[in-house]
Length: 424
Ligand code: AMP
Ligand code: GLY
Image (cartoon, rainbow, N blue to C red; front, side, top):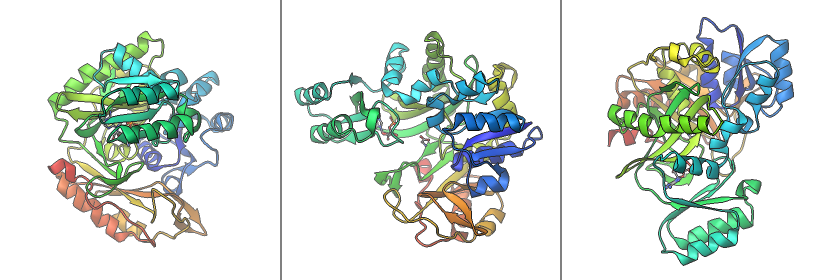
């Protein structure tokens, strides 16, 4: 069957690459894609928010399954639009995507479902939020814009002054537009973070191997927050008994609560967790594969992904059987443009890609790349996701960085410590 992947990052390249390996996949289209997706699949010049264009393309090209990468189109109802057109799409409908698109909705659902999460208050009036902060003890808090803000609407504050500033920025200056119409102020949690992703058809939950990403720009988790500088899987921090605990106390009650709320959840349920001294607590839910967690996850998945995606959209995950994983860990290192996450230049030619990709157990997923005059050039901040398997996490790390060394363009850089957290 023909399959359409929507999106243009490393996650979508990994999805397209994995789907292409299925004997059931004929043509694999990516809209709009990048230089890497055009190599492993076929790029289609349609933007993810152009639902009518995507549906027209799907009908004209006999697309039997659409797989949506990013949260934006999910929150805007792309799955509903495809279904209304009589087409199948993998991902939650708009009402279920609220779990990521509204932090207020998410926190209220967690509270009602008795899922462990940080204590919080929600506000619509910034004056109330400011008064709340001034009236209470000066403790570390986190201020969050309710809506989608490309991962930037969360400010982790050391104390009251920073929190007051964050409220002003989000709710009064509207730094993230309408995303700041409502606010969540919550208790700041301490611990290591882990990502536990599950695929669910609303009934059956198939939990994936735990992963960890690296959101801070620089080594030792310092510097500004980014879209993610690397990831690895599995994360030893989440052992199998902890994973079961998370299934029982986080994933199952959330899927049930969504069903009770008449928002049945289908797709990827991604729990961002803080492993606190009192146990795992939910920081957030995402309603899609994590980027870059998806890259090491799919490197390790042996099960045919098309079977998994189709069983989900058909509500038949109970018939799928357990997933088959490569026992070897995978590490993904993000190579970024000079200046990222602030301003950076585009258009540098990337060299050494073929040498890197030829190394054993290595796959270079593209993120911010495009073709220009027959060359692969940089067009984004996060450019490549160099992913490798190895017999242990240190060996996977070594393999990934060996591949990184082959690749060059002016100003290219990466963190040097991806996966070191796993060894502590
Ligand atoms: P979120 O989008 O809610 O996951 O927040 C983005 C990042 O902010 C998380 O990955 C954490 O690093 C941090 N964060 C969010 N909520 C909290 C919290 N309650 N305590 C500490 N850090 C947090
Ligand atoms: N890796 C974090 C995210 O995809 O949101």
